[in-house]
Length: 176
Image 1 (cartoon, rainbow, N blue to C red):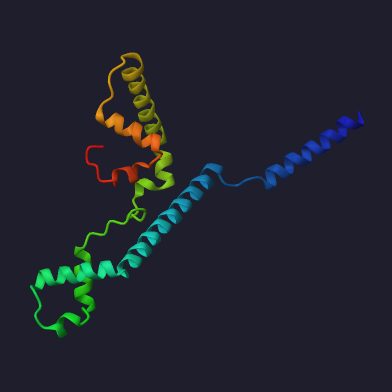
Image 2: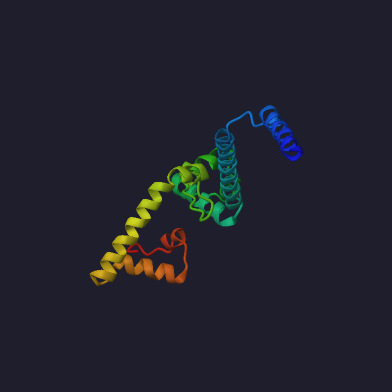
């Protein structure tokens, strides 16, 4: 009897403190806020890495030589050595650098599609697409015993060599 009375007192006290000090916000809203903040930080990190890589490439002699070659191509051949040795002014250099196409592997401009929040939203679609691809692969090569196509042979080579897809695309073989 005393134990049930003591249990009831603690039970009521716990209910009171849970109601009084309990969570006031919806946990889904908190999770969504954390996800959005994380995605914003991820985007800023990608953007700063891209800008940093571009600035590092712009300091290399090869980039400066490409700028000079582009300026010579635009202005024609320069016969005076003093003009050739003179530094380009900043306005012309910026204009020419906008024309040069910098392809830096690993430091591409950030896109919204690479953010964690967008990837989480697209997860059901990606899983459905992957399962359909796996089923088609199983049907084509395990059940029907069809010969490998060129693209599928390239995929098997890439997966056996453990080369990431982006690096595989940059190898230079247009067929795969």
